[in-house]
Image (cartoon, rainbow, N blue to C red; front, side):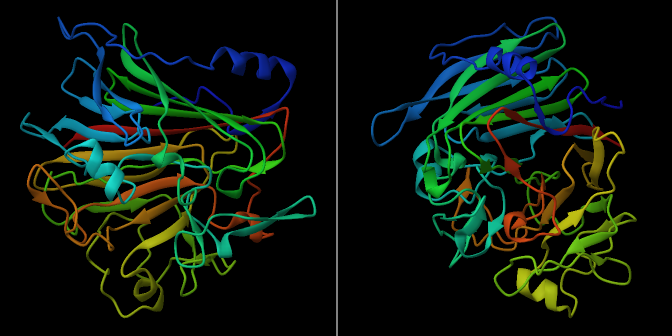
Length: 391
């Protein structure tokens, strides 16, 4: 079922929007909340998940759409720890990678299921200039800044408020990132709303405001395996983009935008993820497989567009990723090394994939890439939608 756009892409100015945004600044709830899942009705229930080393409580919300899809979200990192969908034969199974408990996430989480911010992907040398001032961000990927830094949004405890409507179950997450957090200028007030619908979609809305000029590039980093286990190399992928941004040895964009035609990066027609993954190609060698940003064919009205779709032949499961963002990062799990596990299942190399809608990596340092600057009085607004199905 098509999903219509409910919000403009990116940022809008004006007191009316700012006032509307203020109404969406959700308070914390620290108790179980939601409706029982009776008569195929959506439900959202909050429970205690664990405690941080400093005794800060972390909560879990279980969302159920009343039609066989269930998701667990924790307040630590806004992480989707479990996402159960039926296969083509109606058998339910978890299709995302996660950990067994909070301490495992705190100790060693490669961004499984997390909200990524303030800036998704890499910024070269952790440096950027804005309005004549140079800022130095925390570096956590060699000399570069990755996914928000040493303590990005994936490692912060968000406030959560579950909700239920007649057609959906969701959770509203809010976080205040102070001025100077990880080196970023300005206080950033952020809200992310996950809505699991009866139409078998997980609709994610991102909003933020700032009190100083800053940069923002939020995304979601769920690792998928539509079969539930094993390699993802037989998953069939199609990407709605015929160009990508090549990277240097540090996986920083060179500034070029190149055609995928005639290269292993051509997913304009459905193709198994593993078909060309080990081809003799400099870009693949640098990423140890796919870890690249694809430019999406955008809508003229900045509405939701299909960034990519995936089909897993054995289970029959499908995943469609829609977004208002201009690009999507395809990552084929090349750096998974067997050092993490869930319910006894070891997370081996290429046992999951990510499709991360975003603005281009390193945009603040690339004058030809679209701006990610957010100014006071503006509202950052974007959406990512996962559609689940079978065939």
